[in-house]
Length: 313
Image 1 (cartoon, rainbow, N blue to C red):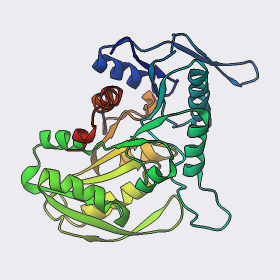
Image 2 (image 1 turned 90 degrees about the horizontal axis):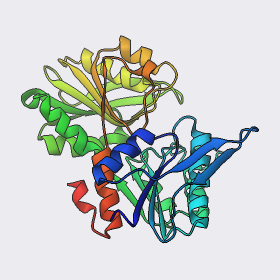
Image 3 (image 1 turned 180 degrees about the vertical axis):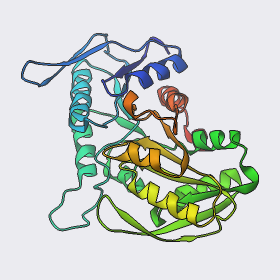
Image 4 (image 1 turned 30 degrees about the horizontal axis):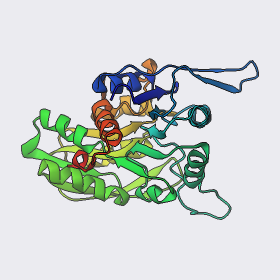
């Protein structure tokens, strides 16, 4: 395994890549990623990759364009270095929110990124909690879509909220995910009925389900500006919930997100390390769980040509 499996990392997820390698008991493969004087990205692979099974860990989070280009250039370099197979490991798949034409004259960036990864030379993709499941269909190469809900449910169990626990979906689109949480935790389910005012603001209408006197956990795939999340939490609190927690896989946390979370009724926001959080955004209310073992086990199983379906149970 050590002679044939190589894990590389771009600049966005180096700590996560190192943790994945610790799980696999291998060393992170060496690559130099910096820029030329004019700002163009320069990549050099410092390992012999010929004939090896290669995994490149790189989330396309902020700065999205730089991280995406780093990933594409690394894949190209590895392809030209005669790697046997290249798997792009994207803990966070950026440009996923534009997955359809919902207005005239707008792009489908999720499809564009899928094409770019394929043309660059990726043989398969491994990712966590896509913003929309149908993005899997944009790829003509194998894509393994993992879910972080198993990591979250184990943490929620440790909080011992079982008797008065209810899982809340922040909108109708998240019902499937919320139901998976509720089924695993054997608890109630509620839905926030909201109407979106614009791309950054949503108006809560009412709560469908019983949250009164219960500990509520709002679950979502990401938290960006936290506007929708805070609105949902306020509505849940007004409906009589005790404490309100939130669990979101991808901590985008842009704009006024941290300030909104700090001032909100959220008791704790639980996220993962699919996106690294800067120190200035780490507040007491934010708890970070790692997906290193989840991704590490998936990498091991893909390398050994074993099934990864066990990771969904």
